[in-house]
Structure formats: structure tokens, C-alpha cells
Length: 501
Image 1 (cartoon, rainbow, N blue to C red):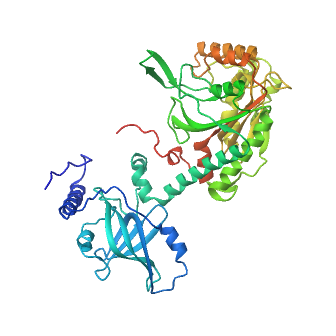
Image 2: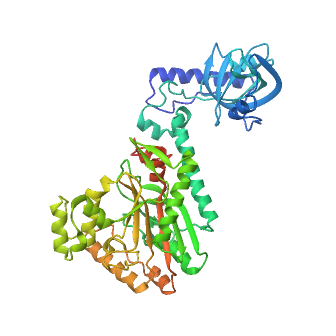
Image 3: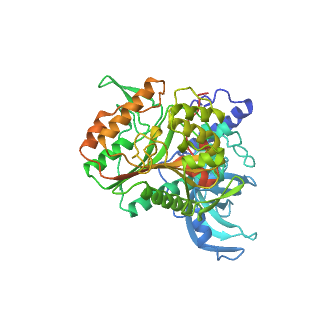
């Protein structure tokens, strides 16, 4: 007998180790029977859900002559293995193991099986006297002998942190988790389909950048040995995507990919997250509002079949059009303060302080507006709303608003007090862009380490000519949270960032 491996988890209890030893003994027995417990392939002819659909007509206590081959994980063994609940990615099918049907030698295989093992089954389809669709097993094939014991099936993997650290066990045990991540896949597919239908080209831009740009965020820094330089994990693909519009690769481009921001962890934030960014030539932020609504509505319908979705104790209405209201108007509605009537920085700071906002004393007019909005107006938002016409001071890549030079043609889409989209009429004037970069540089010198760095090459790209362009970003993780009624971002990211044990 070959040497038994040590426990995978050194802290395993005596009971856990005893159960593992039992499985190891069965593993060795399979090997002595000449059976490879980890074979290379298995030919599957049917899935559980497909069998239930195909044989839905079958009468009680009826045996067919149809032989099928299914594969899945054992989730229950009853009557010494006579009945097996076999689960595949589509559902459950019952397997009946009796000597009257099993081929010679299969009894020995059956005795080596445990809950959690992956097996293949070949046999005849029938419906039992109790009405259960069942496969009368002729042949059992071990596809992977599980050495770890699954959690109790009635309680599942209830430890929240364990669900994130061992997502594979969570997915085995919790149907709700599988449904969420299947919905996530459907949401991303629906967004892609809608964009492709509209003639957008999907592209890829660098994950590592020498100058992090496109958002107000702290980057992750790494070192590129070959060039002996520090580079940054991207905080946004924005400036590279707009370079592609300059270059005329397409008038419509998009990217769905990971961004990285070296910030805190919370139910709303994960440092590694998924974003959609879209850029379309010859349109503005009004065009992006229509696009955002179409994408969000299509995603909702793809995931749930409707755009009227329960979330917490309310029903969210994602049917276009969403409400539109300016940021300053929302602040006025929430506090009575009209920042458009305030023209000096000192007055703006005083107004923000009067609302109880903590300030450093270095905030400009736009930052004061943003501060009051974030603390007083944003938490009041329930239904989807486009918060438009945001201050120029906090919008370094948006065109100045036609009616007020302190504002820009920009909107953010909020829902339940959380941002899910951000869009601009993209700034195309290279001189204005350089001036904005210099303003951001002053903010960095004043201690704002999230302010934009100066990207001279991007300004050079603008000098070659960026057509009028609308840009849109949608946070995929937060969108999935709303569309699946999930409170924590960790429940919609398969492998969220966690502190090591």
C-alpha cells in the first residue's frame, strides 16, 4: 500500500482526520481493484435537467429501454448506496444501484463511494413507483475520489468567510451562490450582445501603465524588472480607449475588464473589480444616458426576466427612462443650500461645514458640492437616477457645461445610494485638458493623493484631434449586486480579496 498523504489542513479535528482516513482507505481499495480513481475522460450522453425534460411524459413505475450515461457529484447515499442523488451542473437525477442491474464487479466499486465523489453512471431510464425519474445503474465509474468531507447538506457552508475562502465548496453546497454567478455571466453577456448589436468593437488595453489615469484613485505599484521601472496596475482604461478613438480604429469601442484600486475593503468595495468602459464618437453625455439605460435594462431582463426587481424591502424600476436631476439641485433638495448661488470658495466651505461635513480646509468649490452631496443627498437615493451636471473641479475629463463654466456635461447613475455608472461629454480640447491636469497636480501637491497625474502623451493624442465623444463606465460588480438582490460585493465576486489567514 502506498504512503498516505498528510492532512491538507493541519488544524483538522480528530473526527475530520478519521473521515479522511476512511476515504484514503477506499482510495487504496479502488487502486487494488485495478481502478484509476482519477481517469482522463468520461463520455456523457445526457444531463439531469435534459432527462427530466425528455422523460416528463413517463408514467409511474415504467422502465424504458433507453441507456444513458450521466456524470456528476454524489450528494446523498441511501440504503447502503442503493439510492444515490447525483448532481451535475444542471440539476439532480436519482440513481438506483441494485445487484439485479449492476454489472459484475460494480458492487465492489459501490462500496468505495462516499458523498462528494464524482462518478459516471450508465443505465436504463425509468420512473419509480413514487414518481421519481431514476437511472437503473448497470455501470459505475469513479471519476474523482473526494478526500474531503462536504459540509452538512441541511446547513450548507454557513460560515461566511469560509464561503469566500473556499468558493468551490460554497458552489457545491449553495444553489443560491450558483444562481448569482450564473446571473452575473448572463448580465455580462447581455451587455456585450447589446454593444455588438450597436456596432461597438471590443478591445483590450494595458493592465500595467506607467502613468495611472482615468479615475481619482490610489494605484497598486509593482516593479518591471526588464526595464527597471515602477509601473501601476490600471485604475481605469479610459485614456487608452480614447486614444483609440483618436486613431480611428473604430467610432465605437468598449472594454470589459479588471481595474485595481489600492483602497479599503467594504461591502461596496473590492480592490480588484470589473468595469465596462464605452466610448462613442459624435455623441455626448445625452447619448450616454440613453446607452446606459439600455444596457442596464437589458442586463436586468437577461438575469431575471424583468426590469422590475426586488432589492431589500423595495422594488427597483430599471425600465427606461430614469429620472435626471443635477447634482446641485439634489443638494438643494436635501439641504436647502443652493451652491449655484455661492461663488467664492470660502462661502462654499462655510456652507459645507454648516451641513456637518468634515473638511481639510483645502477643498475647492466643486469638492464642497461633492462632499455635501455624498453625505446628505446620496444616501436618500432609492430608485435609479442620473445625477447630472457635476462640478468641473471634480471632473478633469469632462467638457465644460454650456450654461455654467463651473459645471461639466457629466452624469453619474445612482441607485440605493450607490454609484453604478459614470459618463461624460469627453473633453477634447488639448489645452483645456493640460490646464485640468495642472489643476490636478496642484491638488496632489496639497495632499490629495487620488488626484490625476499629468499624462503628456494623452495630451499629445488630443492634439491630433479627438472627435466629439461620449464616454460611459459601468461598475459590473455593483450592477450585479442590484440585479441579484445582494448586499455585499464579496457575494458577487467569485474570489474576493481577503486577508491571509
